[in-house]
Length: 293
Length: 282
Image (cartoon, rainbow over all chains, first blue to last red; front, side):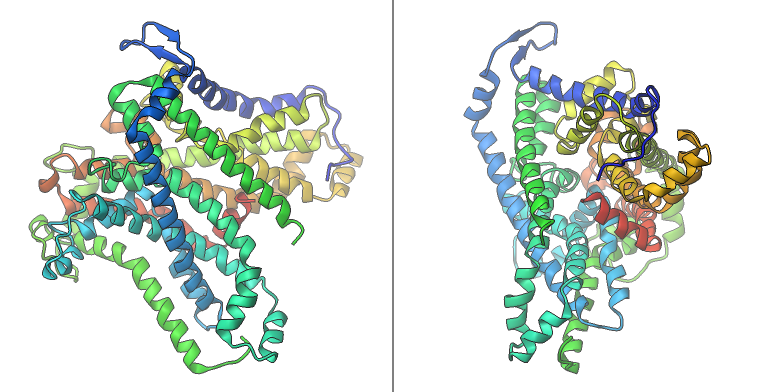
């Protein structure tokens, strides 16, 4: 795929690269390496002296029960959001894929929440379910259900999951619809001739052929839950109550802001970096395989 | 579809209509709240039909700001959001089209190295390295500036990869022809490559504008003055200053205003948006 005809200038290509390289070094490599260095050091409260402490920050981190709790919260949160938003989006996409007259209109009406900022989505959902003034909290109260996401950890998690799913359906819908539309109609016709009904055709033909899209979306959704949901959590619960919705990314933010435990916060950043790199590696491996499809 | 049953269509329409309803309801409710007075909204029995305070609420939100919180008027926040979203979109397009041009159309030592240096940034979103980046920006005296809001967010490889991919598909004959006509690298870029890239640039612009507009954590950290905050970070501050006494009707008007520009971009530039979304994910 390399070009065989190129320009021969010696200096120009470097000049063209300079703006991006400068920005990348100053705002990416410098801070990322600072995070790694800092995770092996301990600073005093005023940031005046620092000493090398080896793995101490990591050992402290992994001795904290709160850290495991935030890991567990992250896992629960990610699996709920990914499972719900993928299955709901798939349901809608299969319906929109039927040759309906209004399919285009429905598509437009389904995809716009992608453009709503996570923090704004969070504000919309806490408004709907606010224990004292929420329109949808009212029916819950009539049923004598003691709904209070500001005090009850499970309620808070439910609300954050709902807001995150709401925001992600549009993205999954778009990719599922594209995946469904690329399945050749002749395969489905062959299934129908063999006497397979719509449900059977879906599970034995459509769903397996859709698996590359599903797997791609699974990885994207996990990355989304890790990072983009920060705004939702901060707007809806602020990580509370009592840390019930504090994910790993939220904890990096909260610990660094409150305590100034820079070494500990940096160690958390490094752990996150490792997780993200692993996720990205999985994604790339999959993309290479997709080429053969 | 293979067989055509009218009942099937009815079920499909019913499910999709339900879906559209679920998707639209939170926004509808916010819109209704932004048309009522404070007492109606906080009272816990807000009707589901519009009220009569629309103009007053939006006028106060945009030009005056909240009364209890003494925050900035939203008009100013909207301007900050526009400047930083435009800066992020244009900045990213500018640096990445140049570097992609260098990587694809030139041969020079360390070409692969340069590409990998840029490529690695894909792996780590800014959320992961948030405090060290904050410190760098503080050391550079860029807190509370537009440069501080914009520059750390354009340090990413998505644009470079997208342009590289596109340049690879441009036929080689075009370059041969312009070289026969005596065109150098500048003229080839300006007269041939740039006009061909218009759609790609537009698609990337749409995606990056939405990305920039919706930023939350980064602006929250580096803006300490109210006059520099963006609309997305401003809403939450309206709600959590005095909790129960928060002016929800103004916050909801602000939420609607914060949604309008990016949602309008998605709805009216749907083709470009879908293209940008699919291509930046490759």
